[in-house]
Length: 267
Figure (cartoon, rainbow, N blue to C red):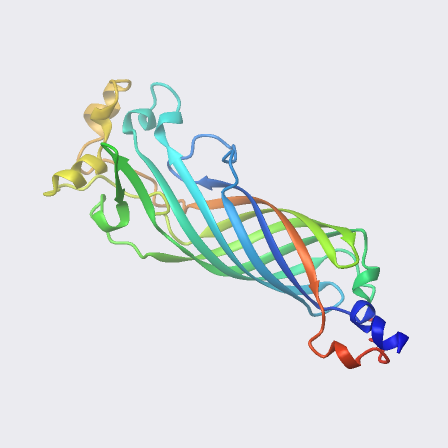
């Protein structure tokens, strides 16, 4: 009876659920510093499965916000005169392989107090940049401000590192830093050149916003920020970073009721 009663606690657990929140930082044409956004701007849910002593897999869903603004560019620069901005609320789903630096001891409650790891993954992320004009919100992908169509979803490749801290036999606290490389240069709606002709007045105003600010770069105003002129750099794809804080809860086996007399072998 004693063994059966304790089975739920001491039988090994190879699956865990994770949830967390953290800060985001976008990297692209409209990013002019290396600072994370101050507020909590990413929220994640995940499920992890331990496969081998040092290898696990994780499925994760993240909702996050990113933004960029030429307002923060260097004074007198081309970017300052360009005067573009965006904000985007996106979803990301990915499958990640986790490589632990320490060996698993064979019983989840005997795990190391500090457990460092690296991870790589593959996933998909939505592309949904917006901006405002005269207090109205516009979805830029639909307007084709560069005269180009781009997909609402692109592939993303998460890479990162983290530390797990054991709080109780059943609970970890996680700090994690990661970068997401994508196959799109349109997370911010800026990639190629200013279109030659735009019939829609609203699209024209959102495509080239140099007249909304004071003249700070005459050459850029007259010669660069014109139809056919360079608006972005399509050679460098956009990306984003997360600094995330999570809690991880170990999940009891589905058949734990009768497992009190069976000892899981140590790997």
